[in-house]
Length: 399
Image (cartoon, rainbow, N blue to C red):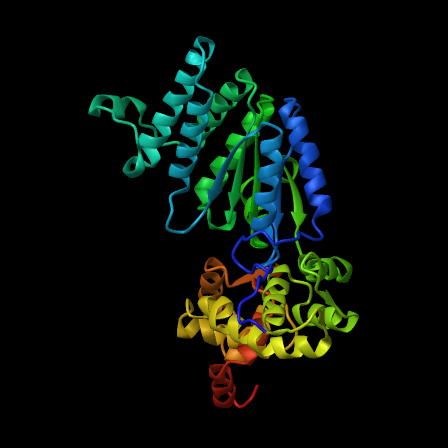
């Protein structure tokens, strides 16, 4: 057998799989929404939440392609702790205005939008601003109210979109990293644009805590957005994700092999891609059987432990790790903060700062009131395989 062969499985951050399974309902709903937006019929913006590895970014990318087919102007933003969200919004709006700035009739509308962008840039993102303004002009455009400034941008850009008959949609990934004032201002700006029936919308995605973040910023977000939780695949959809990529290569799976892959990955799309990649690379012949899956599982865990899981674990301080160990020691997850404190031999109040830091880092989230879970599926199993956890258990008398 050759050492090299075409492998159609594509584990990666936001990498689209060869076959996207189990997301038909979300894509059909988005397609209908974009058709309405193209006709300038008022629509609700959409928010997707879910754990790491469920395919939120893939879904956003697929929806962006659907929107482009409806002649909607698409702008993609990935929020990061180190990146300025406001500067990204400004850049996106500038590109949009350049794309529609044809014809004399748009001149006044675009001029108004550019003025709004100048005010936002000078006031809240001066370091990254591409506008060349004199000191006198900078003082003229400067404001201290981010909400009003961003609202002015959304209104003026929305008016330009309406007049050009070119609706715009912002696809915003990793929204949980937005700062509180940015999120509040974005919600208010979108709300006002909706009230004016302007053809502008948002499709956003983030970790489970995003729903709570939005609700805490504004009371009307449940009317402003359609919320959808993205989870693991059903056994039927997982089977398609497993088998379809190899079908055109003339390779099939036995029912036992498919079942073992599903049970090992629990139907999480990223894990399916990773395990199938390892299984297929080690397999021979045109039929993959349960024994072949068994061979690939060892490599599968090795790859995850040295990359996917480790990259998150290594971002944690010693105190963070002990908090994580105490969560895993609770047994079943989600667990209560009280039980975590008990395992650490501390009070709930004394560990609240560590809890907040781990939530901020995107390692854990508040699953229910006073209950915690990991944002990455099977992270608890990774911890149980970690020698540092065993050492901690010994020091703490096994808990």
